[in-house]
Image (cartoon, rainbow, N blue to C red; front, side, top):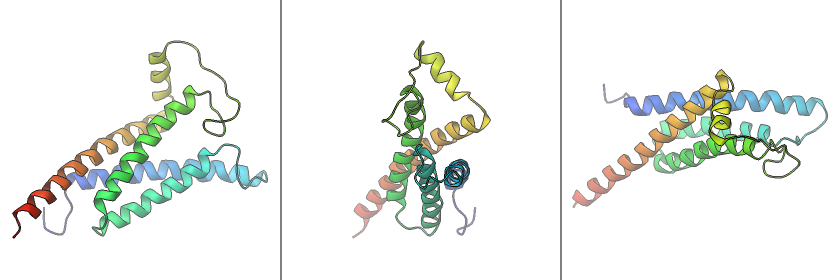
Length: 160
């Protein structure tokens, strides 16, 4: 690889970021538009505006990272966002699909936890792709945060 190219791990992380951002932006815009057409600026289901904002933030973060700025901060923010997506998805279903995330009326799921989690992991190709991509990106960002911060410390200690 030349000096102008990025590492393989950065390339894979960028591709995963695009996949996740497109999924969340698409779902967010599509569903928020439905609410807007029904006359609601702020929908009763807050996931859709949150998907739009977080998906747009991921795209902006990708451009900032490509410029080589604030990478550690972006890695940390991405880790929090991916954990939020994963925990939020399962938490939203476990809490009974509450429209205001943790507030509002919901329906409770019954039965063992493991089959419930597997059913929701395999709920469809988009859900599966999103969850696997989010988990993979979470792992890559953790790796990048740890390895790049360790490299900086070694370099800074070795400098006069």
